Image (cartoon, rainbow, N blue to C red; front, top):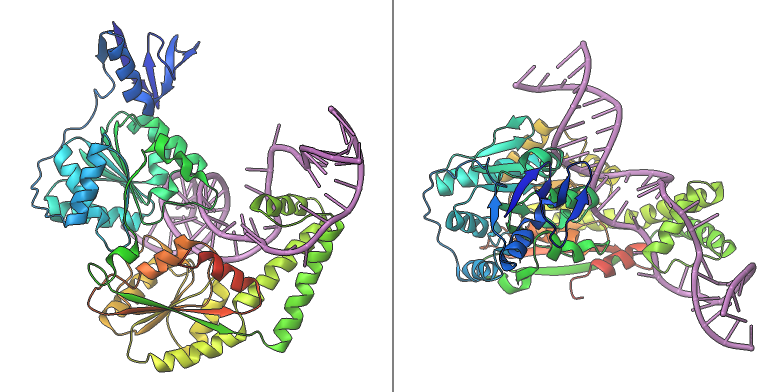
Length: 443
DNA sequence: TTGACTCAACATCCTTTGCTACAA
DNA sequence: TTGTAGGTTTCCATGTTGAGTCA
């Protein structure tokens, strides 16, 4: 006879099982809570009786009304997840209804559920969807709210700081925007919850740091995947992508070359070749001690800024704003400085992380109503913000990641009646061109 | 409750154009 | 002569968010 208990993010048992280790402090074998299912299965297979006290304090599942109708692909996704033992990740593009699939899973499981989301905005959005679609009572934790219920929505940060206390209260855990999960702190959090049933949702599972390989251990494998190209024109708007190339001014080009030269000289001197991210990090480490390295790195930053924010882009933008004078347009920049400059120059509202909550809300509302036709944003809208439909997006600058690119495109695809257009303005012969190539759609 | 602050965590950051020292 | 590793176990900048604190 073996007893399984939960203690502060750990499963505690009085006999050995694979994945456990002896704890002198607790005088028992322990493991991170997420190994709960495996441990229990092991004892069962060994013919050992198990007294399971792990979920003794789980809140009851509330009364719900389930009238959710799934589209074909949503049903397929759900089926795939169930057939993988109710563990795994569903990849669907923005606007294809990931939330609905998750709510259907929740409604069919009827187990106490925790939904983990990256922002407070998303927390409220999920809670509202649950109230509307399931007519259920819902708890919220984060952003000043603190109510645990049989269905609870929580921020990643709160899920992390309160993992010890909440890890034994939910059988089912949903990670929205699951690409956040593999980071150091959050992956530890995922291990401290005992929930045997796990569902991850994202449009963009791949991470720049390669840590997406951790998914199978933390959540389960990718069980269903569809991209934006599978749905364009059907469930989300059809779209076109247009690239416009511009050149730096003579002045910019001279400055750009000077800065690049500075970087190159330093790299040559130190026999460093920038071939991988590791090489780059080497330079960053050097810059913390070596003044010359720091200057070389600053030169790199500055050269990138010049290329990404070139004057020709602004002039091209002026033309485009005239051309699309009847459309709803979002302009995306890489840094806040350019966002504010464009706001001043074209007299359009701007949203960055410096914009107050109230002001942001007001701007988005007016954009939704049509009072504002054009808005400019830095990288704030890249994720988790419910941005009203626009049909034209103009990218002046961004990262070299597919994730950001897809997320920005996703901002335009919410409404399916209009054809969306994403225009990228790129500075030729510069680092900006390489960034654009890296994030480019056709891999 | 709010507002203004600070702090911590997370994400991005590369692709050019083969050196030097040391061990086997 | 040929092959291989080249730093320490953390972070040059900027952008973004959530949580916590204090008035």
